Length: 120
Image (tube, rainbow, N blue to C red):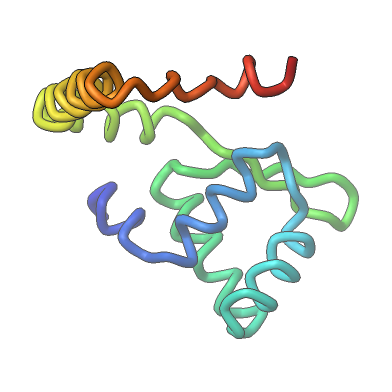
């Protein structure tokens, strides 16, 4: 299965988001996914299996529990594939920042504080 086929499913993307915060038991993942998507425990297990079989997640046994974690290697491959397209949006974001700065100078608006400046 191609990486984008794996990541194209919103349930699997959400599972990866949960695992990105750290290792989680299959029970923890199932509880969140059932609440958010309303799917059965066997359906969640199938999604975990797809992630595991395609290298996006690893699993280890701890007694009767199965603990899942993100395996970053396939995500690196996706990131490398996306690299050739970054120029399309980074140039536009740079241009937007320039236009915002020009607009502030023209109107005399104070610069928007960064999060760090807001907290001080």
